[in-house]
Length: 162
Image (tube, rainbow, N blue to C red):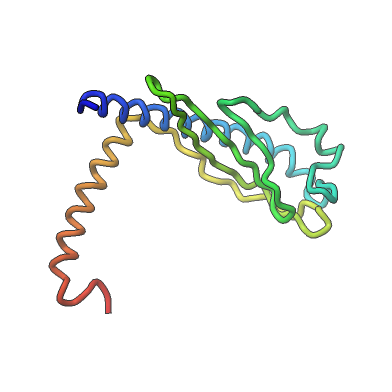
């Protein structure tokens, strides 16, 4: 494969990765706020059935969560915390492969009786990225790593710690 084709494939994969990360992060930021509003008044309420699924009363309050090839959202299967996971998928332009990304967010704690006992503190929103920003950060990382490797090599007689 030529250098030009390899570069184009690398750029297409990076572009797809930025798309899936941004899609998942935007969904997490949007849903986190909505679900906090829904669950905050439910502190002290039993929200899960014995099988770990939501009670009917809670199900009625929930929005329809995305469930497509590009984006799907589900509750993580735990009975101790209320977490949601977002899966995002994007085809790589000019290739037969897909790029996937997963992110999650935490809403609160659940006790053994399946009662919501605590709501999470406000969180920093998941960021959005650009391809140019990622390339710049990767280049900066390589430069800093080379400088760190050089310094580490000068410490070889002593090691990096005692």
